[in-house]
Image (cartoon, rainbow, N blue to C red):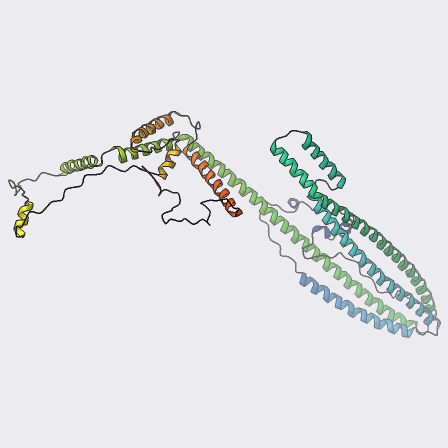
Length: 526
């Protein structure tokens, strides 16, 4: 008589939605072994699997739901075959005369008791394994926390930390160093002092980890002992099955019927084994497809990174070429061209505004316009008005003609032009500052300022490139200084301490309506 025990399906590693290659079909056992050794299987370089220089076809992710549905259908078929096998086994027992008062019945009852004991032991083993998994998970969690803490610490031992603190303090007390080095040394000491607590927590976690390791050893010992008990009772089951088989073989009256039933049972058992193989094949196929999808994702990411690096390199080269071209264009220009143009502009502005008489200038412009107009006039031939003279009525004649002649109309005298008021805007102050000159503060100093501007232009024309700061450099330095000053003022305003006053603070309200912020609208007036 063949063994009546149900075949145990082979244990397969669990595959999640995105299983990494270490759980592949050929490396499942190796992956588990590496996990116990706290190591990870090195992944195959993606360059060996894909050609990153060519387009990569995207692989669709295998459906976990479809996989679970197929596994569930196979499990349902296996349960149906087990029920069919159970029915056949019941018929075999009835044909063999399964009764307690017969020798076969007594031996079969003893065999069933042994099987029940084995089933109970298997359940106990499952519970022990669950406890072992919980302990492993706790150990992995503590190890991960220790790794994260150690990654931010230079020293993990309290004695080493104290020793390093004493060394740095002795160095601070006995060695002479710059202020920046001393600040850095003090910061290192404070960091080490702050790491004491972390080191104490690491020490405490190490104690917890040692306790968990001891528990794990004890649970593993219980598991090994339970395996030995199961092996021992399996030997008893095999021996009892042999005794029962010998007794059954002695009964030859119903042997033909029993043999037929046994064949049916073995056929059902073969179908069950085929279903388990089909189930394992589905899992292996799903795992391989998942690994292919995972490698495909790695290849796409690697290709994108490579393309990004190439694009970045190309942009950097283009930027370098553009900067080089701009530098060459700057070198081709006349040195201090902007500064000399600014000198011409300021000199011309001061001359036209304060050194030239406006009436004379207007008369000169009117005369030039009249001469230009005469030059453009074409002489008329056979003029019908030749010999005529234009006459204008006097003011008094016009009054006598239209009025009653009670008096002459008084003509208003033209106002004499006033001397120009000297005024320098803040924008002009900034422009003078760009060429490191002081603007005139009165009308008497305008002529001297014009001479200084002309001399400054001549001086700029004689300077080699880069010898003195340009207007652009001065403008940039002034902008940075203003931004720094504004940030300091904002910080001082945010502190809100008594005695600190800043007109730039938003909480300050001007008392007069004419108060304005500094800008091009304010003038220096003398």
